[in-house]
Image 1 (cartoon, rainbow, N blue to C red):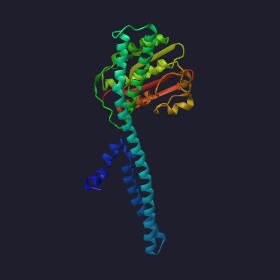
Image 2: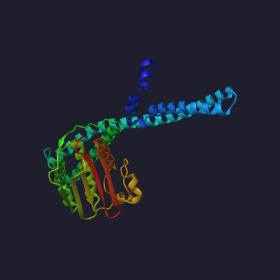
Image 3: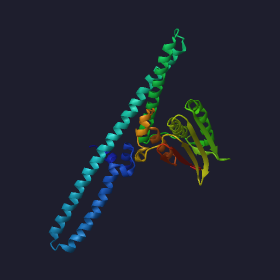
Length: 316
C-alpha cells in the first residue's frame, strides 16, 4: 500500500464522506472509537490486575490477552460495518448510473408518443389514440420513478444539491393547489387552504420544498375513497413556519406507522386499493426537510385519515 493510500485510510472524515455516512455509522470512526475503548479498558484491567494478582508476569499476560481479544472483536465488527457501507455505496452508485441512463430513452419515448398523438405524421384512429394515451401514462410513471430513484441516490450519497433563496411558502402552496385542482376534481376531493396573515419569507430551497409539498398533497388526494376533503394549514409557530395537510382518506394502520418513512414501504390497506406509487415519496420528503433544518411528523388512524406536518426555520 502506498503512502498516499495510508494517509487516505487515516483520513476518517474523508472516509465517512466517501461512504455518505454519519460518524456514528462510519467504520473508520467506529474503529477509532473502539481503539480508545481498548486502551482505556487495558489500563483498567492492568490496575485491577496489579491489585488482585501478585505475579507481575501474570498481570502483563492477562492484560495482553484481554487487549488482544478486544482488538480482534473490534476488527471483526469494523470489517463487517465496512463491507456493509461499501455495499450500500455501490448500490447507491448503481442506482444513480441506471437512473441517469434511463432518463434519456424515457424522454425520447415520451417525445415520440406525443409526436404520434399530434397527428403530424399521419391520421390517428380513435382506438390508436387510446393506446397511445396508455403508453404516455406509463412512460410518465416510469419517468417519475427514475426521478425518485435519482433523488434517493443523491440523498444516500449526501450530494443532494440545495440552492437556498428567499421564498414565500404561501406562493408554493397556492401553485401546487392549482396544479392539483383538475386531479382533485376528478377524484371528488375538495382542497381547502387556511393561512395565517403576513407570513414572512424564509431562506430555503423552493424546488425541494415544492417536491415535499407535492408528495404530501399527492398522497392526501390519492388515498381518499370516493370523495372527501383535504385541509392545508400554513402558519408561524415559535421560530418556524408550520405546514400541515390533513385528509379523511384510508389512514395508516397502527402496525404500519413505524415504517412510514422507510424506502419503498406501502401499507397493506393502500396496496388493497391498488393505488399507484413507489413508496419513496415520504422517505424523500423527510430527508429534504431534515436537510433544510426542519422536522417532519404525522398522526393517522385507519379509515379516518392522516395528518402530515413539517416545520422550516424562519432563519437559516
